[in-house]
Length: 76
Image (cartoon, rainbow, N blue to C red; front, side, top):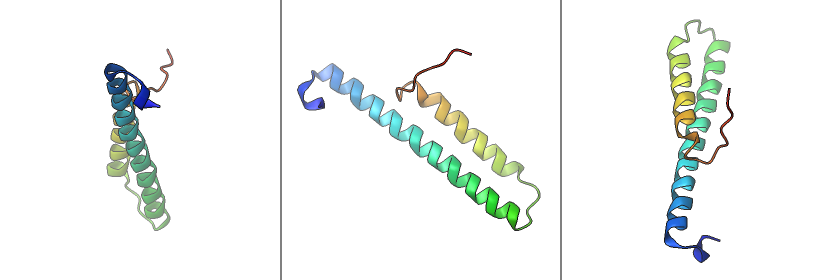
């Protein structure tokens, strides 16, 4: 599909694909972290503030790049 487009459009598509890949990696890492937290909690860990901080940071990082990744923005 991108072979038939001009250079500028090809660059835009590449940038969006790159941003989408980064965003999805951040989301996957966030879900992995949540799985780790669930395992730790089930084994008796009580204080999970460090994991919560990491999870929130990953969620914010994914949100930051979402526009560049082509995610539709919803006005709140």
